[in-house]
Length: 331
Image 1 (cartoon, rainbow, N blue to C red):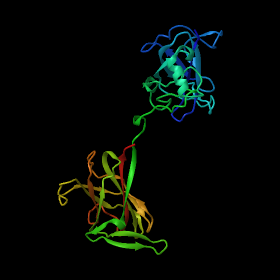
Image 2: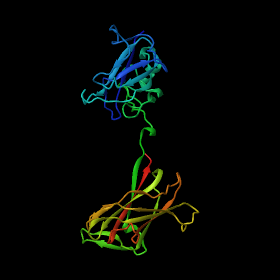
Image 3: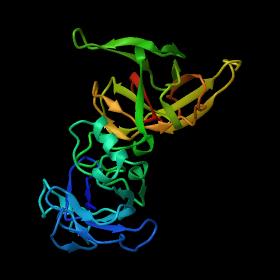
Image 4: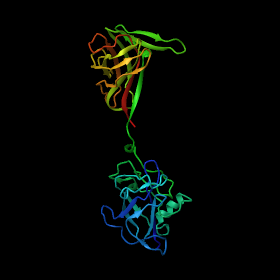
């Protein structure tokens, strides 16, 4: 009976092949070597045993006496593995992991593989399938090595699911031009065309406010909304001073009272000397309001400058250009 050809390629998450990685082939669920004998050639040649070491193409291969399911354990070979494109001077550390695989029978011995060859004309080699076990990784960190490896002689993509992706931070821009000014805030223009900028003037020693209404982004997945005020000082202040801010935030769903109170967050912005017309991105601060998963809600966001507060030491008008709302979004 013909020997069973097996090839395994080790890649990192970017698709680069890893040279000099150590690969053990074990009986499933054990640390015992595969059954039977493996050789380094389709006929003749010499016997090979665990562990295998990936070559310049990131591959290990052998010809086995026995068709069998196996566990393939991969590690960084005592911190000597490296991307083939980088050379041995750039070693790669990664956590040992195990994938399930199979040593398939030769096509001549297995009608199912022959049928697969008919369905994929031009495919050669004895490993013609990526079975479900190939997508299983036990103990992998995700930093290196694919969750589902791809054999050289298949045209199937690497197996992966949503769990291999990472949630990200998304942002929503609230422009001063879309705000409803309240309590003394005045919409005005800084500079002249074509270099003018619209802003809301929040004067000193008084409470100024503006309100925005927006829908909770459908990509929101977890956590509270945060906000960052973008403003410009209208007058130069050469001494390190601060602005006292308040967020008043409420979220409303169907049947909620839109006039009810919200969550108040009061904080002091960054301390620094200010130069007129130079943009300030103040402290990013949580609003304390968390949307409801799967719900459709709108948010009313009110920004106040509490100019009479003792912590508000900037003497001059604050020009609010807008507010950046950030949140954790679905992958």
